[in-house]
Length: 60
Image (tube, one colour):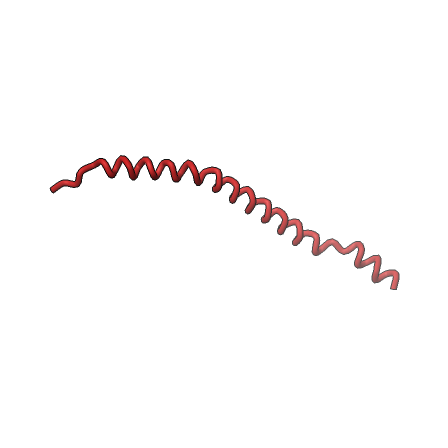
């Protein structure tokens, strides 16, 4: 019984999967933060383009 507990305690196979999961989670948080920060700037840019295009008269 002692060997089973020692083997279980020393087994590190599942640790790699958990580490990859944590890294993936951190990358997702970084992407969401970046897109949120850039979202406002992109919205302003597209509003400026929309305003500029609204001033252009269509050819008749």
